[in-house]
Image (cartoon, rainbow, N blue to C red; front, side):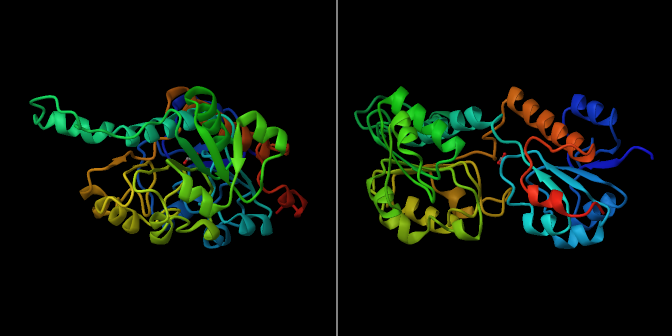
Length: 330
Ligand code: GLV
């Protein structure tokens, strides 16, 4: 039997491609061209594996057009781009890249929150415009991070890493809301207290979103939720676009119903809602939460490890749908 063929959907480290070539026939995308869903599907023909990023949609149509596909390795921790039940039903193994990005993404969430609270981007733009001519007592005054209430929506690995930073490093009072509550020992170790969502929103000085995107979390933060926050509060989203209603957030920022926001993810990214671009009190970054060289390397290597295991008949370390193993090999 010849070597399995795989498709790598986006450009990735050459070392990772070299490693994959030692195991597979590889079609890569070194030029990093934007493939339409139809082109992705056509290129996938004959391939047993797909090395994907969070940007490719892996749905029933793609799977039905490619019944030979056996594994999808997503180079991201989030996998809302993958229709997991559709993959499971067809015996396609799906993996993600958790753990290796936890601390890096938590660092970034904290940076974005601090930038929003202390008006970093807004004041830098002012300086660059050449408008800084004198000191004044209330110039770009923001809100404190240390000692404030850090409110975390979603309390997985990244949420917990942010809680640790807040409680241990900045003396923050940490509250969180999540479907599943942590064990009492974990809460104690993190110095975090579970509250209902209404309390979380009402008491937040700095609200950070770190929950996965799903139909259930679509617009978890909309006009009503924003209206229940303090006018001095900040909102940071490092999770996924669509969790926040971007138009409602832009209106709340414009009308100063909350003080500021830090956003790394957007509805319909890489498009950004024009109203967000028009308000000053928001820091906008292009989905770079996990973007350090070391972490992106680790993510690429982990995705490769997962694909090599999945197509080699072993159980991949980050298998999301072990039920798929039960399906007859196709
Ligand atoms: C990035 O957004 C990821 O899910 O890893």
